[in-house]
Length: 255
Ligand code: ATP
Ligand code: ATP
Ligand code: MG
Ligand code: MG
Ligand code: MG
Ligand code: MG
Image (cartoon, rainbow, N blue to C red; front, side, top):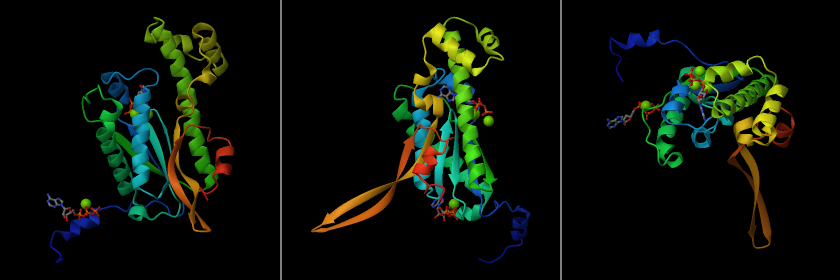
């Protein structure tokens, strides 16, 4: 195409390629979901339909963008791990973030009715996004552990907070009762005051959700010959990703 005299404006665009050979994590987070949750009457502290919807959107993103090897989600956020060697969108940060965030938000609206058949979506939700590079596997693991620890701390706090509120306390009063208390105090409070055994709450609430491409072996018989092929199935689970067990069972994820 012929160059126009206006073409020079292209030179104002800044280079935003992410460092090569590093894990790229794109984390998206619901914009003002405190309000969004209120307006749509989310159950407190954990609305299971809202979490399932988040998970379905993350799965849709992973099924579309095959360079994403892992995703971890909690509350209104999701982190997508893009493989080190990826050259998707030439590793341009703005492209990666905007495609993931818009695909996620569009999926949220697209799938809303299947998770909330009796609730009308009141206004279009938005998500923010950012990309961060992590130079090695151990720092990437620390990043994911950070998010899962955060899930635990917030969930334990919110479970206490909403138990107090549901028992008739004001939000301010419940917050001040919990201020500065330790984990064992909160567990004890839940058990003695509300009969809740924290460790028996659903893993979805306590640990969040992760999505990965699970390696499965398929055998097909053709006469006397059996051929085995492996394939990868996008799979969601809610276990621990801080310890080594999960990663040792699935070494190919970061391999
Ligand atoms: P920001 O725009 O800065 O992210 P925010 O209001 O979204 O503001 P967050 O720190 O992201 O603040 O917190 C998200 C809030 O959304 C939670 O504190 C909670 O109130 C609500 N929320 C999200 N998911 C759920 C859910 N599944 N069940 C109940 N509440 C939820
Ligand atoms: P990329 O992902 O790189 O942007 P693309 O296929 O979206 O790839 P564009 O250069 O953005 O490529 O071009 C958008 C294309 O979408 C157009 O070439 C045209 O074929 C189609 N398109 C967009 N809007 C319309 C429209 N209103 N009517 C008909 N075709 C359209
Ligand atoms: Mg935020
Ligand atoms: Mg938010
Ligand atoms: Mg959040
Ligand atoms: Mg286009």
